[in-house]
Length: 353
Ligand SMILES: [Fe+2]
Ligand SMILES: [Fe+2]
Image 1: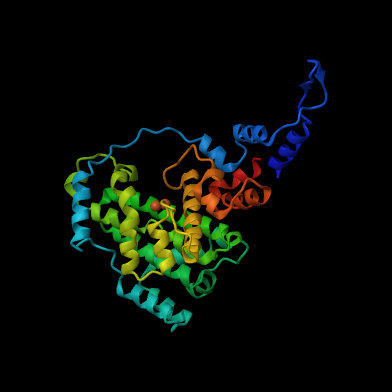
Image 2: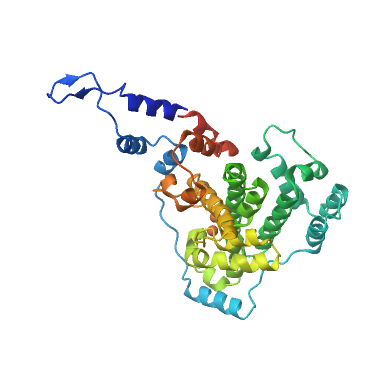
């Protein structure tokens, strides 16, 4: 990789000329410390995640919705068990039951999905995505099922039905929901492709990534009931609701995870992908690795602009990178360079270094 050729060049001093201790110009380069090299590397912004953060445009923030009343309403509904969790239609429920009890063949699953063209499209899209690069395109669900696997299939159904749940609500909130779903798919793909060297399963990482912000979608549905407040604003986006979504989405996500009977490990990620505090017990250590992977993938998705663009992040300083043991070495950097190849718009980043 070019970055490492540059490092070697800098350490050997081949591009430097320095004065010796007599003050005369010497051809012998002064030794470069790793600290100097590190700060130079930082300044040059060689890595794709640094370059993208450098290019973040400053936008005028949209109006922030007055959240006090809405939050109070949400908290009241949660406390009185009246908060609407996302219901699962009967055909999807049937598919999930068949998959969980292993009583299915692919033709039966296909039959149950016939009345859901949107879900069918979503499943085929994932089966033909960059996650399965090198595989023949598939056009039938019966070919897509074995490729994507049971866990991925169920999570695609969950996110698909959550999406249609929002689409049936307030028009103004639809673009926000679409962006949330696109962000969730990006996090799922990134987590799935990065998982293996950290001892994590790619399919489980995909599920955790796809469902990590499910609480935001449920909150959006609830917010859509407050029409009189939403109508006060001409333009709103996810940021307009940050005072509601940021503090509440993990705990609301856990309520959904319980209702949907998701596994303990997925529930832990949904409830703890921003706050990465875990105890030292072995089971928590494993959960903390999956949560850290989702936290890192979430950050990378934001850096790619799939979700609110962010800036000022040094990837190697992140708590998630430290939990996963990610260091600024060729091996780790090469691994992170797989991420842009997942997204058509960002593939050119791979050839720029
Ligand atoms: Fe989140
Ligand atoms: Fe997220």
